[in-house]
Image (tube, rainbow, N blue to C red; front, top):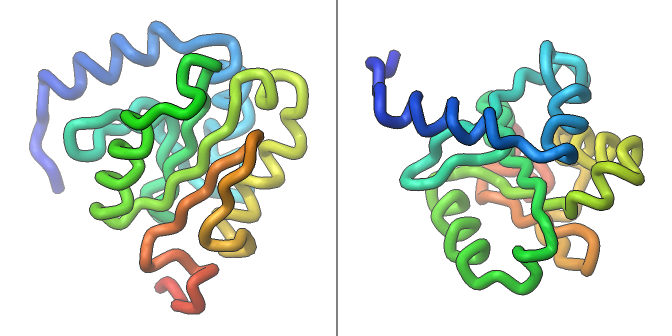
Length: 141
């Protein structure tokens, strides 16, 4: 079990307070094991970064991005760091979370169940799976 990390805890708390409407809407779908019984954490620290949402059991990070992230090289570096630590990363646009919440939630569930192609890069979705992702043909225990 990890010991307390006050600096990281305080940073995560401040990020949670700054959630935007899309993050709040998605959290309403993910909290309390509402999505297929999977537990998610908000603003979960991974290396030097904080994932918007993370399911530790499935090692899945879900990011909700605004338009300022379009083509962001920093996001690619961040994704690479998370992949290197064994986390798959799924990114959605704020607008899609707000306007198309049901398909967004269904996509997250598909990723949790290993039903997504291990690499999807489209204008409205980005998913890059870590080596242990079930869609790679390896079973998780």
